[in-house]
Image (cartoon, rainbow, N blue to C red; front, side, top):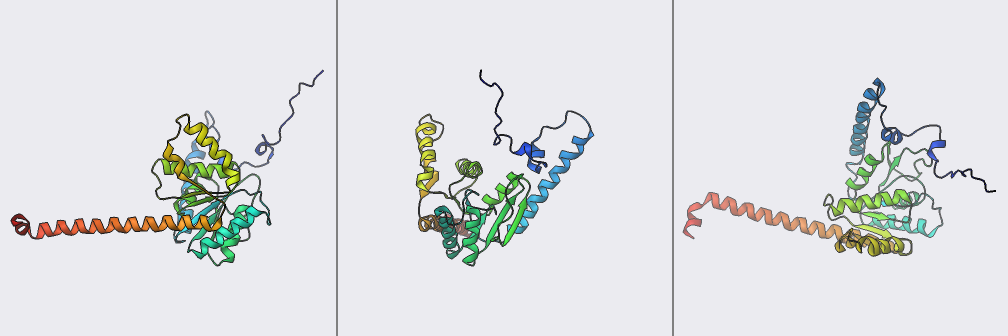
Length: 276
């Protein structure tokens, strides 16, 4: 006779076994149907969220041009992915970029280490979690967040590109948020670089063979992603995009000035233009 009792899966209830809830968990809980506690709790939580935005904006406002690097916290020093992230960050600093990560272990630590040891700005945007992770030892500029959506805003707002190493659900969350912002025109001239062709091959095939085949995305959406195995190529993509963006901005500025000059000339000398 088979045992009909369900075998608990510890990975499904990881957070429920923890003594304390995070602020994100409290925010996402359904409010109580009645009673004064909810009326006082959620409105005041809005001020805490505002405070996190203010702190993040204030801390990161002057970091200069930067790149956000993402990837798994479950990668140890000596792993080829760790080494590649460290080298990528070092090359970014050499190219004049600050490096922004989630501030934790693994790929984040490797990236902060590469940036710090290269003499650049090493920034960590950490998050309150029921498990994991303090700020790694290679972060020079640290911001701690309670809410994921505030933290993710900082990753996009202060970066000119994302470089995404192999990772799990959190890494995919950051990847697809960036793609959505680009696809919908909220962010422009923003490279999203996947590092590790072997790791990302299955996802890219699924996007092409399922999402595209069923018309859920457009063919041009496939161009939002670049894949590489080379730290040098990843950095070159970032630099090239920045230079194209600057050149386009300069061209727009020149055209705008010429239009303005023509308008001023027309106002100043209407007779001349009439005669012509």
